[in-house]
Structures are given as structure tokens and as C-alpha cells.
Image (tube, rainbow, N blue to C red; front, side, top):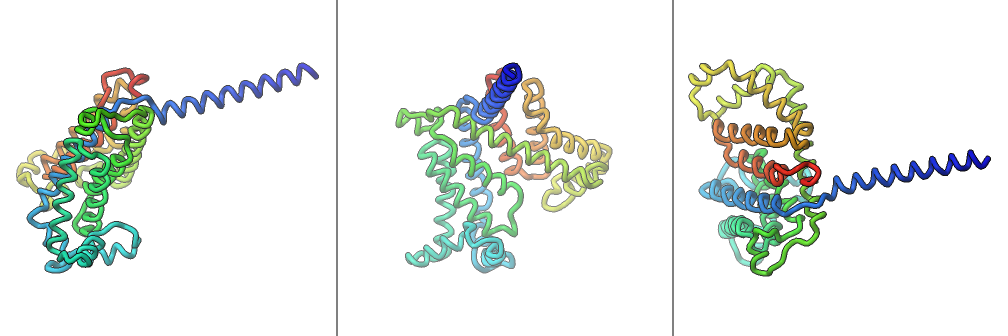
Length: 320
């Protein structure tokens, strides 16, 4: 009887030890001891993204986001948005607030553009980082949702990056805030947590994006690549040149599938991470150069470099 009880106690102790080790390993994965280099990359990169976004849309700002004057306007987008949720930020809120204070729509839209541009500059230099990140996230989301009919993937990824940025522990040591107030983020485990969330999110995005592409034949035979390159306004390359190089389209399509589906597998280990990060960034740079999607290329490169770039030459056990 004593032997049986002793064996049961030993088994219970072993199970408790295994459970503690599992919880400890999970904690180390979710809350690694991290530096703030990745946060600086994300802050500066997204700040530059916001600045370029504002400058690229400056001439068409009122035309696209005004309540009237074009077939696709803010009123139509916001009416459709109301069917999804009344709580999603939109420019209509700010225009209504401006009307209460005597500011007309034109000047209110100009004020929003100016505030968004200033928020981007503040993020780049690292001054009042958290208020700047919150303002950039809210204003960018409001602009994107009010112009939802003319927005595309770059806006979603910018919003995602700004969301993580406004919750991350500021300031990083490269920011102006750190130099002025002699203060830095103290909780390095919290820095590791938010970087880990960003890393995991990117793995889900690429994996399921690749799986979705693989379900059709367009990426296997290269026809999707061909259509993307000849579709206005992305048709920067002469069609005759594309026909001459048509043999590379299936190779390019399959390569994109492999890069995305295998992203969660090869981006984590220290030996394959530099290669996979380089290939992913090269893919986005190629998309930007061949299709003119420069902002999309920039935000994806920023997110990838922030998530997996810093500490890439150090051993996996100490980096992560």
C-alpha cells in the first residue's frame, strides 16, 4: 500500500513539474527579455509611412473625402460603413464636431490632414510618442474608413502597425522623448511581448494569405502575376517586355506561394531567418517597383524588419 501511495505521489510530483516547466516555457516565449530597437524601427518606419501617405493624397484629399463633388465620396462610404458598425471612426464625426465650432468641411478636412502629417513627423523624431501614435491611428483609421471604396491593403497594414505602436512601451532610447526626459521603457519583458504579438500576427497573415492563393490555379500557372502587372494603374512595365519574360510568371507565382506558406516555419530559426526576411523584403520591394505600390512595399518591409530584423545575428535563444 505504501509503495502504491509513493508511486502515486511521485507521479503527481512529476506531472506538477512538467506543468510548471510548460508554463515557464510559455512565459519565456510570450515575454522574452527584449531591447527597444524593434520599437524604434516600427516608430520611425510608420511615421515615414504616414508622412508619405499624406503627401501622396494631398492633391485629391478634398475630392476623395469631401461629402460631395465626386461619384465616390465620403457620404457613400460612411453610409455603407454604418451597416457594419456605428462605432468605427470616420471623418463625419470630425466634420460634425467642426460644424458645431464654426469650422466648415473644407477647413476641417485640411485640419485633419495637417494633424495626421504632424503626427507622422512626431513619430519619426520620437516626440510625445504615445499621443502621436494614438492620434495617427485614430485619424488614419477615420480617413481610411471614410474613403473605404478607394482604399486597399496598405491602409489595413498601416492601421495594424499603428495599433501595436500605440500600446507599446515608450519611449525607446532612439527617440527625442528619451533624450529630453532622460527616461526609457523599463519593462523589457513587455517590450518582448508586443514584439512577439507582432511576429505571431505576421505569421498568421502570410500563412493564411499563402493558403488562400494556393487554392486557385492563378498563382500556380502565373496568370495572376500577369494580370497584376497589366492591370491599370499598376501597368508600369511595357506589355511587350512582359510577353518576352512570360516564362518567369509561373516561377514567380510559385515562389510567392512558398515564401508565404513557409513563412512561419523559416522565419523563426536563427539559421533561416536572415534568408527568409531578405526574401520577403525583396518580394515586397519587387512589388513596389514593378507595380508602383511603393507605400504597400514600405509598410510591409517596416513591419517585417521591426518584427524579425533587430538582433538577427544573435543566437535565437538570446534574441528571443
